[in-house]
Image 1 (cartoon, rainbow, N blue to C red):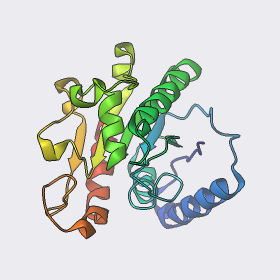
Image 2: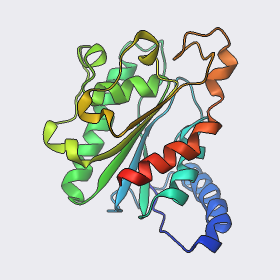
Image 3: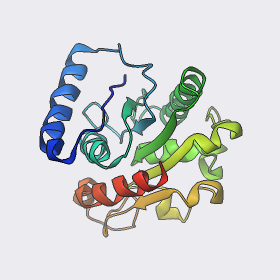
Length: 217
């Protein structure tokens, strides 16, 4: 599922932000797919967190995309990775890598000039790690890694509440320079804290993440 947004003048930003909310709700409720193959300059591909509701994810993906629409200097689409996002499903993360890689390959074929911003929150961050070939995840049976010839199409990587960060892993040097990895102090998933409430406190990072992506597009 994807939806396209075109850059407007600065004075229309408040109107545009409201439109994003309306359009997201409309696409979610109607299941519209008419724009799924739209060749926007940038495709924001989001893997949501475990059990996270929403189109791209109510905690990170949906509000972050609102920031990206305003920050990116070009038009964009968004795609929600189709995977269980369920820790009781053993193949959940691997399923996420399969869908994300298939989407990236398909979009690269249909839209040769399109670039990608990859976003992962919590379990979704592990999915992104697998797609980018981070060894700790890429070694898991069933995980699909992005073909190396598509590496240059990844404009930016944005990770939130990343569980691999807690055990000292990061994306490979190939992608590190265009990656933002955001962890709230005290978040037990990414920072070794004990307050699980902090795992949903990422609003502070959306602005910096959006501008990091804009710098690399």
